[in-house]
Image 1 (tube, helix red, strand yellow):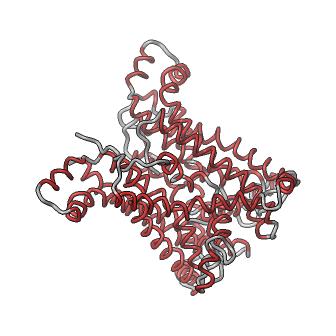
Image 2 (spheres, one colour):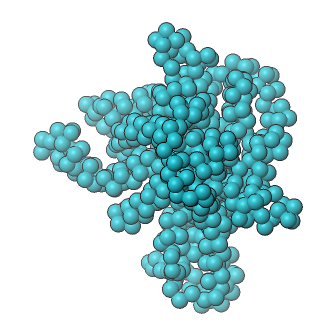
Length: 278
Length: 279
């Protein structure tokens, strides 16, 4: 706690109410629960932890969770960039509505999102029925998990990129063109480099959100082990079976994955500041 | 410096790109939103209204409103305190404190629920002896649902208030203090008028998340329909029980609230906040 002591503020304010409330609330709401999880993990001992963490069903759940989330965030890295570009650079009818719509995943309860996606993309749904004759099932397969993760992670890329695009000077592009650069060269050499840090930050944020997502996925997946069972659903199932050790181990692996993503995000934001400061 | 201005005369290539963006959003967002409404009304409006009068629906609505009404003031108070501590003080561990406030965004809601179970479950929780002695039930009851909601909505107000508080600077506060204002007066007369739109934005996001939280609440509530089911859990349970109209009618209510949130967000962003932090 000593670390949180203010260095420069007067003695009288040191333990004023805002400090007490902030540190007390964070201790009870975040630190205590985190310690409970860590303590439960440690109580298992390394060999038992490792044995549960590397069970085939758990390994398959990490695979489905992390790889699908990466694919979803990657797709949104491209499509989110297109959407942000269009919203900042072009004026078209309904632009404001489209702009507001991008935030839908923040506003819509995830259970409703999952329900809606499952209905549209099931075999008999509006879109799913186009794919059913081709032998492609979307809802209740890993493709459905992917779709839910794409839904949930889209706003992160768009919203991270928009302010950077807005602040970008168009004169540089004009200068490059007047010096004889082709549109492709302008895009690759002038536009893209400063956009890469925010794009990748958005991808990492979306990935982190998709990895932890439960509500929308549980409604669009069949949650069959080794097929489309994601790690959060596995944690939930183990809790329902009162398998607290199993739930804790998978939950801890999931948490470590999110924290790793957080570290990557911090690095990417530092990289982004390098461009912003030039 | 010339900021990018949107072009209003689009070339065909630019129209193509715009079409691509809108089509993507159409398949991902608009069609799913439409299907919620058409399915809810597929058996006619009377069936929709009947579904909204069922006991289980009304109890889920009541529970959701109670939980939200408890979570908003608590996390607003915390968010204001945390924002003030972070924006007004330089101290070792400040960056760590900011990361800590943001932590709930990176924790899977299911893991958040798991942590609460490990602490407060009356079977295996740390506090189970105390809770049993006192006869208090937290997991599978209202307090657990409130704790889960508080956890997932913790960062919103602080995140939105920090930038507006930093923008205000500490001079107005110092001036008011020198002129003899009490801390309460400083907050009401100096700080609040400046941060109110950022604060409102944070409360709006807190409200949306509190109404819609599913994963964390599902873990700690036991999802007992008519007792510990919130609206999102009612949607899921009805859907799994093949009560399609009930599920979609409740989903329409939640989707309607989401549309109101989006409109509120758009208004706040357009008129009152020039620069918003991204999430």
